[in-house]
Image (tube, rainbow, N blue to C red; front, side, top):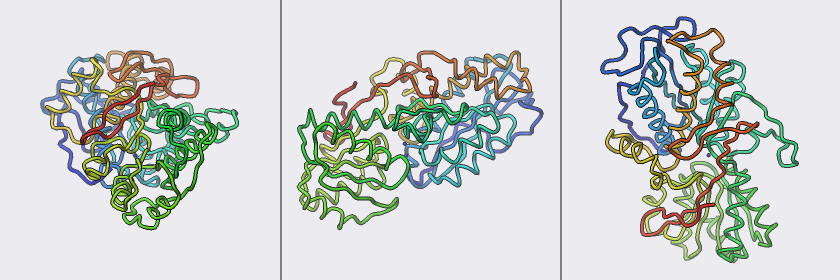
Length: 407
């Protein structure tokens, strides 16, 4: 669902920095990259699309790093005999038009047999059709807008999958918004909330679902408003929230704006918590907001990755390898997304021989995939949605996100 300008230490053994020489659908690379421990001399590329600079880049870099570690593991373990995997990562800057251009670039590279990303649901909307036309599988570790998998009429119950090539390891906003609303009304006993969103596909969708479910539970939405991506001055909005008598501010959007909004809200004397979805779940939010973040709440997909035994090795590699970005938000889910693609490729590419219809076959194999990932079970339903419906609620406590409830 979702980061700033940073440099990324890229492991040269797993990242290709330019388009590869193309021969059919999988290129020959007898020497491999320097220091590469790949499984063979046929190169297969896993594409990545995420914001690597600018808005949302802390989370986007975490997605890229998760894929890089999965690819390095696959090569080191020779998971697919005869194949060396490479990563081609493109920066969409959280902009839908750029994402669409990146999708076209990845499709044009015949070595690309699968793509992980994007981060933002709005970007995904521009990429889906491009990948579908090329029969190229796409798995997002973070998109949460329900319409991406269930169609524009999902609210009425008329669910239709728009693109067979699109999958996600993230849970949808339909579940996340309801989970949050239930907790706010029944557990926190907050009877009045103010709802704000950033006008983007993810933020507006999540805020709308939360408001609907909260009112159904018996709560009162005492005010709504919108902000623009990139806004830094929220004085007018803060005054509205204070005067509304709201006991909690629910925010639909990314951490970039909410980390500033919560500080200005508290500085103005409105001592109420700000709550949001997985787009806010990053250490950067707390670091930027400082003490103002104390008591704020977020929901995020799955269970805390650092509590999972299967993820321990991944986290150790992330830290020791100097990878940048936030692994705790989507790093594990991007690792699992890349692993799903790699496993599917292993069922299609035999002894390094890539069939002419490899892309379509990989799509078919991903649909059938089932394994225990580092962030939980990996598998997809008839819409391409993850079968893992677990969510965790976190609260900012003494400078860290602490898990409060998983369900």
